Structure formats: C-alpha cells, structure tokens
Length: 161
Image (cartoon, rainbow, N blue to C red):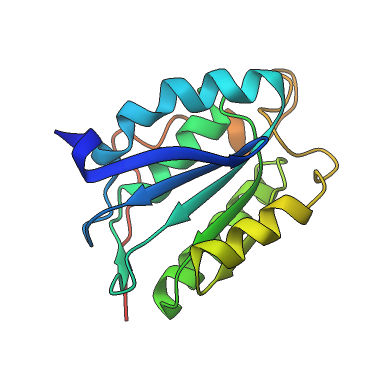
C-alpha cells in the first residue's frame, strides 16, 4: 500500500515534508497525499519538501508531469519546493521543474540540500515568490492552459546519472 512507502508530516507552519522510504520515487506512490496537500494549500501556499533516501540517484519520469498537473490543473498551491538529496541528477530535475513553473507563469522557489534538516531550515526562512503559489487566473494564457501531462502524445523523461 502506498502509505507504507512514503509519508507526510508538517515540521513548521505551511511546510509539508514527503518522506520517501525507498529508492523508487514514482507518482503513483504520491497520489494518497494529494487531498491533504490541496486542502492545506487552500489556506495559504505551502512549501513542499521531498526527503529522499540517501542512495536515490534518479526520479521516475512520472514525477514531473504528476506534480506539474497538481499545481497547474488541480489547485495545489506551492510557493517553494525543497529536496533533501545529494544526487546531481535529482538536482537537475528540481531545477528543470522550477523552470517549467516559471514558464507556466507560476514561479516558485526551488532548493536542494544534503539533509532533511537543512532543507527544512531553508523552508522556514523563505518568503513567497510574487505571482507564485497557485494556478493562474483562467483567462491568463500560459503553460498552465496546456492539456494535463497525462494526455496522449506527451513527452516523458527519466534522469539518471
């Protein structure tokens, strides 16, 4: 069951940590977390942290489209993303995700740190990005108006170093 594979906890107001408990980081293991995250983000944009096992060296290609879809189409309001990792491949994915959000007219802050404690400290110190933290108004043309990533013909990628 997915809840045995990862968990969610709140170490500070509006800071949500997803702890992955194995090296297979896939979207299907995050689905059960979404309702709580969306509900929390209705009050204020949240900072979302992924705490990965130290040996993680890749992110499954399902993750980026899944989280983009949650933020661009499903109402998950995120002001920043932090990832506890030492993997160069994961850092590249986080950077690319941040760029995709900027192109979608929803800029967010993104940061990686080697430990969960360090990334939580960063999360506690950040301020919201102007214009970030939620889906753009429906009349705003943007990347967010594209079909969800699950649409046929979409491009998927996997990064592994």
